[in-house]
Structure formats: structure tokens, C-alpha cells
Image (tube, rainbow, N blue to C red; front, top):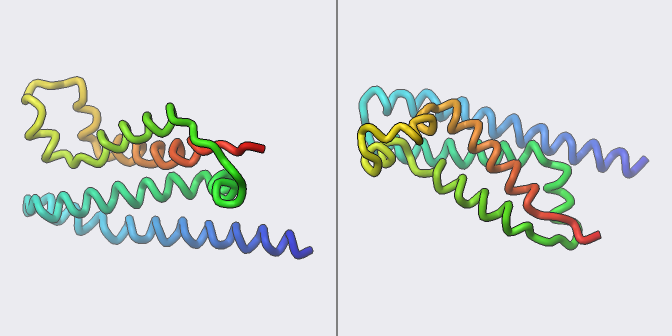
Length: 138
């Protein structure tokens, strides 16, 4: 009985954390779009980094079961996964205006990164892969 109550408490905590994360995202997106309209680069960069971190956290919350195991047991790190996640995060966390400055105008190989929906998917994927990079030694 006590174990079931503990599982429900953990599940409720994860659900509430996920809802809070989604609410923060919903509150920041209109401000981000407003700054895009005014082309206020400073705030565009700040909001895009905050949104990227929130999407990453949401991806980690998707893998809650593994995340709890990471903190409760001895684990090992899969360095190949971690290196891929770091590379993915470096690509994602660089805001679009910097990509436009760094890349030539006709550089079409990374144009898919500029689409907001793709950035959201890649951020959530990075959060999931980050949690999966830690393996149990049991």
C-alpha cells in the first residue's frame, strides 16, 4: 500500500512538473513572437535560449522512469550518447540569428534547423537522449 502511494506521488510530481513546464512555454512564446515582430535581437536570443532549455527539460520529463533510476542507483555513462547529445545541443542552442550570421546565404544543408517546429523536436529529443545516456550497472 505504501509503495503504491509513493508511485502515485512520483507520478503526480512528474505530471505537475510537466504542466508547469508547458505553462512556462505557453507564457514565453507570445513574448518571443512579439520580440520577433520588433526585431529586438537581445530579447530574441534570451527567449530562444530559455525556450530551448524548457523543451530540453520537457524531454527529460518524458523519460521520468529512467530519470528516477539515474538518481537512485549506481550508473554508468554511455559516452557515445553523451557526445551526440552535446553536439545536438550545440547545434540547437545557437539561436537562428547567429546561424544566419555564421553561414553563407546559400548554405541550404542546415536550413531545416531554422524552422521552429524542428528546433522544438530536436530539443525534446536531446532531453530524452540525455537521460538515456545513463545506464544502470545492475
